[in-house]
Length: 502
Image (cartoon, rainbow, N blue to C red; front, side):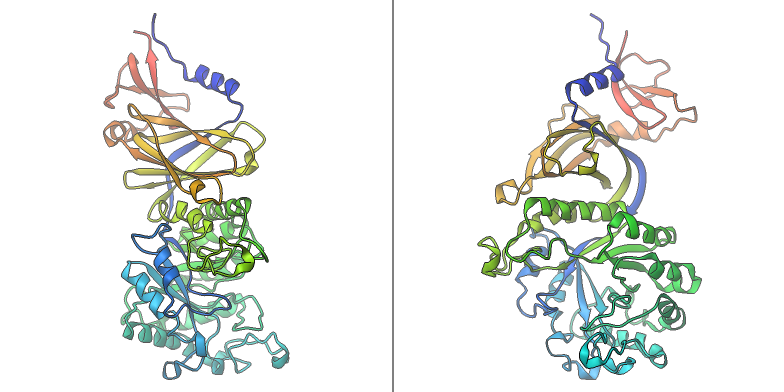
């Protein structure tokens, strides 16, 4: 009997047999490179950890099960010669944690909630939205604009003197949000004026490598980011465009705000948000954990190069607080399920480059399914989130041939359902693999590229029309005519092994 395999017939047969089959095409088209993932060194109402650095040890470093590499800290509204004036919020508070993160090779950045009160229109670090302020809006006084970056330099100097080289400083936490706690209001044009005329004063010679982060608006709105990118002088100084997600999903405002920064080679960081933090008497359930996973995924799809969650330690965060009202699973300084969910991204996506993907869903459940893909060294990583109550198969079409792989899967809050690993059986290099997506699951598929089988084929491109197909033997050598077991490549990038009549 002659051997013959038709990809089209096989696909149609598969669709008949498996109505829940879904397809994702990973294109050899790089997008942004991912710097990493992190959290704020805060506990409760902005109380730094101080010497209690157990959460940092759990979340950072080579032995961590989570693998964070970015830490956010507050730049308290101190002057260098008054470093203790702000009590628990002084610069000492986050120093022990910052030292550990830096020792692990991580990134530490500081964000001011307010500059020193004496620089502001209301004379205090408070935002002004409180009874004792009489509705005085706290803004940076225009005659103090020239003092702002020297003040940031004093923070960098103090941290360096105490053993921490800070990697980046932000201009302001939520400049668009009027608050009763520490805060400072800026209009978008205030930020343009501040950066355009005074950002040159950030001492990058003394602190080489320090980067400047834009004001981190409450909802990542482009009216706060675009003006900085549209001004040529501002673009020279801003290295990272940042924002938060309160009230706005990533694939809307964040995605819009990322367009210009990415165009000009800037990074885009989501620097604060929390998911399901309003729970009063329990830890997040598994559906809420998947909601968090979807937010991580969507921030990457929106163009994000960094994602920094809110607190490290909270019952809705990564490390337990020990408060009994949230249940016995909320053990103090013990890793919570949300930390394992974060590890799908922080362990595997950090340092990778996102690849463009195209997904085709064969059922009406596509709103409950999300994917993204990345390349890192010799690995292709595919993320797939199934928030539906149905098991699905995911056919992954890859831009390179792969020779091995594994699936990391999480299906529930229980320890035995988190980050379970399963190796793939791949007998010979393939560019297509069908994997399982159980109901309510977060899946990370890690494939090892077979460079020998992939290089010759993927370095060749066709100048023909969309219907053009080329054929290669299993060593990647082009064939004049297809014969035997060979590799078919179409102009749309699909590659597959086929049997051709002898």
